[in-house]
Length: 226
Image (cartoon, rainbow, N blue to C red; front, side, top):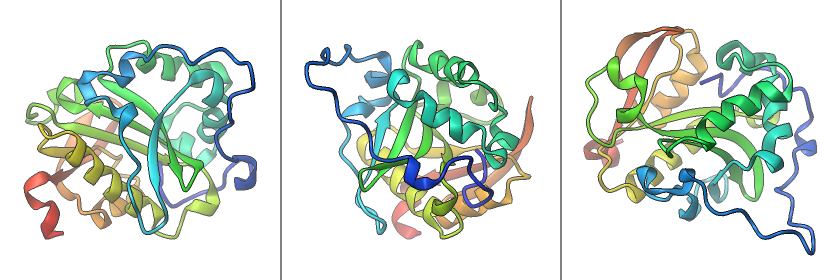
């Protein structure tokens, strides 16, 4: 996860705009992909969450619609330092297709706040991910990756607000999930701080092939105590 509160973005926030509406006479939407399937309890149909910043929805990525936007975010130096996906659209597309063409254990999403896409999320089954080999996984553990797209949305606590709302949404909509997890790079102090502010606790340090990470956990049993 890159900084939730750092760095410039290559395009002004106003250029992001809302999700485009379908053109009149356009072909009907494609059939749902596995990303909308049972491994993550049909995430595509979840309602928005109410937050102090406005209604917030996770909208599964559509490559044709969203590739340019996400590529621009990935080329922000503050993002690239942690995601390592800077480069042409093909680089971002390959990363997205690996999830979109999979079995639904990881769902790439736009985070849409008050109608405007402003962040990129990956919601994934941590118990089915390679991460499960690095900690004591429990069935239906659910993981989060996040980047905030525009510099205007950083530095004002928005990351923590959305992390808390998303964790609550996961626990509400996935009754078999007892924990929401994240594994930010230990060097990414802004990210770790955002998770702590969102009610996650620091569980342990884990050594992944590409980074030393802080395992952040939000337990269902403790959610109302934070």
